[in-house]
Image 1: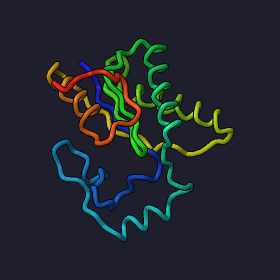
Image 2: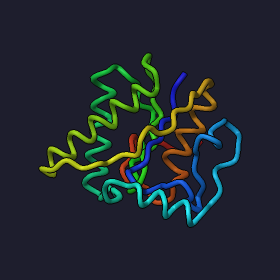
Image 3: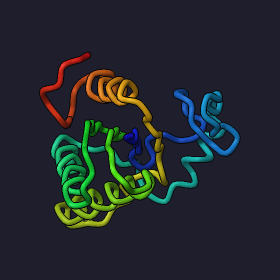
Image 4: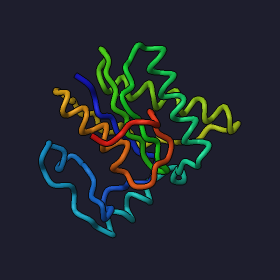
Length: 164
């Protein structure tokens, strides 16, 4: 068993976005995303307490390094990770709840990014997505998606897997 964890950078994926979003009425697995709405996007943007956060190349590698650090320190098995400009995908196995795993990764990455930049900044959206992967086939398919289904390769772990 493993987890597919996804979390987004603060302010980069708001309710009402054209790509859809998950809200209280659209959160059951297999249901449609919330519909696009310019008015809802404007409302969500007005509620933001900080500017959106995008990760540059150096920041992406710091986040990747901190994900690896958390996995080593907590005894998790990191199958794959891809840190992009506005979101992070991780396939990981461990004995802890996936929400706790995600929280540790976000916390450690934020701490290190704040330390290196010398300033505190809101970096992540609240919560994220945690999905259980129950079979080896699900793990392999998800690893392939994380590493090769995201468009341009950015900061990834591992670097040398082939598509299966």
